[in-house]
Image 1 (tube, rainbow, N blue to C red):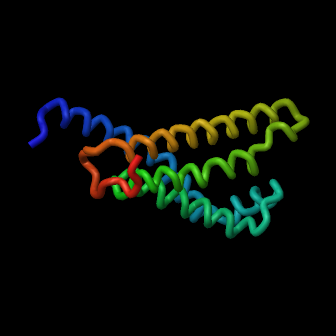
Image 2: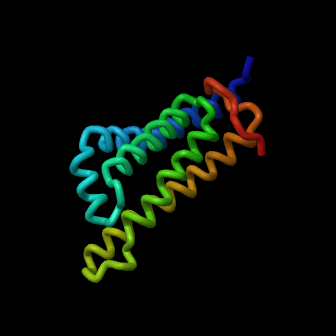
Length: 145
């Protein structure tokens, strides 16, 4: 039976997982419910097969978010989030190509957010793949670092 400190840490990690995953699950919901609008925006950014890309990124965010939230191979789920975030940052938020100051600032913020979230997801991957006792998860890690 875990002691009080271990349970406290497990609960803190669980709360962090819930808060982190909420962003990706709500984003995935948007990808699936507002597909046409999002595909139009992606197409305006030069994304080929924009509708498929919207579904694909929505699937990465849904699967990755659920994996982290539920603790089912959360290390793999974290990597799925990285795979969705980095291309999105570089393809959808090319601030360096903007000429309008306000648009440039908006794209820089979105680019920075996606890169920072990818960094956090990568740290979560390392955490999940390295820690022996994750606590309050359904499965252990798929990878072993």
